[in-house]
Length: 221
Image (cartoon, rainbow, N blue to C red; front, side, top):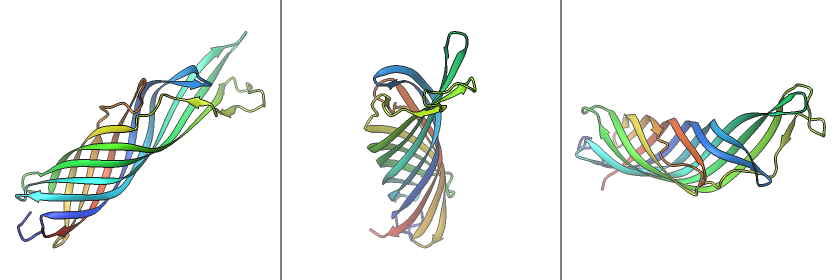
């Protein structure tokens, strides 16, 4: 960036993302293994702060810190035989996880333009989790549980323990927008790469694609 501009910036950071979950881990009810989850989806949101320092006007290094909430969904179906017919059940797993996040990044301008590419390493520290398991009867249509319903919440369901720390590589393509001297915004699209499992036993990997908005204020050091 031109020398008349600050080379150090502080700002606010907002992100939103879609999650694509793949897995191979077991659900248990009352400690009895039941089913395996293999594919799911979800969303993620983050709010935080960022600091960025430019060097030679062509590249920058920085750090972000924030609070993230991820929602996750998994669904699987299983069919079991009865005496003269089969019953198909659907198991739904819905969860909300919250994390404190820390991200270190390297950012470089593309061909002296306002476009830039960023590589970063993000660490999520688990704060809380909420898991809800539910089972529904899909077929036959007249099959019910003993209470006459076709859906039940599984209060004593569980999955493998969730890792309290997750390290996530991340790449982004962005554009810097000059608002006025000493102030600019950055818009980017990014992908988080699923190199680490979210659970301690079995496999649960989350690949994410999202949008990132940063609003920066310059400080002369």
